[in-house]
Amino acid sequence: MEKKRVLFISQEISPFLPNSDISVATRKLPQGIQEAGKEIRAFMPRYGCINERRHQLHEVIRLSGMNLIINDVDHPLIIKVASVPQAKIQVYFIDNEDFFRRKTTVCDDKGNYHADNDERAMFFGRGVLETVKKLGWKPDIIHCHGWMTALTPLYIKKLYNNDPHFAEAKVIYSVYDNAFNKNWDPKFYEKLKFDGFDEATIAPLKKTDFNALNEAAIKVSDGVVQGSAEISSELKTIIRKSGVPFLEYYPEESFVKPMDEFYDQIIEEVVV
Image 1 (tube, one colour):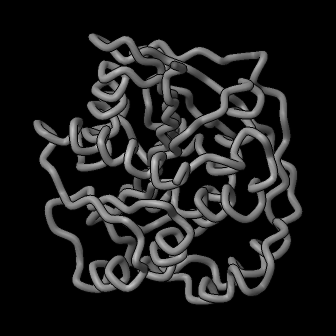
Image 2 (cartoon, helix red, strand yellow):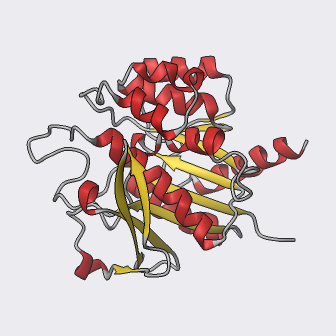
């Protein structure tokens, strides 16, 4: 029997970035799921604050070299990779000079969220999917962590749904208590239309706030996970109304087994 494959797409992963709900979960979960018998791949952005020398990042030439068009502008896609110390896992990094070379993550050193976070999320999500295609790796589960990945479920379900790498993949979206306080570019809706989304799919994203973005991801996902011990009442309501299978919060010391079982549940529901 072939191993099931889980693709982790995360806004941040420890030890490449400081500890947070997201970075710790996506450091420990891939290792635990791999030890439980599944095959994994993990991706995150290569933010400019990541020390390449310390973490021994190196470019994967055979995967780099593509260009992605975001809002009618060509952006080169660079893929790097590094190993996680004390764990037999590798992390792939999506890199681009326009989006990820600044020395911060999603906001500047004064706490102001970057004005182009919408385009960065578009580039990151599409960059992961195009790289997975180039790897020739077909995931059974795609688990997205954090709002920087919220567009990826839409890409998978609406634009990559006929691609053999993703046609049968099931998407799980983890919701965290990490809201941004600055709405995305008012032209975000038009950028998505340029990417090929139909108007009905992206109409709710004319609102460019944190809740609208999460709601769009949740509605097209096959499962939702509460990644933080506490999330807002608004997010809880969105999850409840969606009717999507839901896994409650588990602390990091005990979350591998229920998560592994949740993956199997989502896969088995599809087979039935």
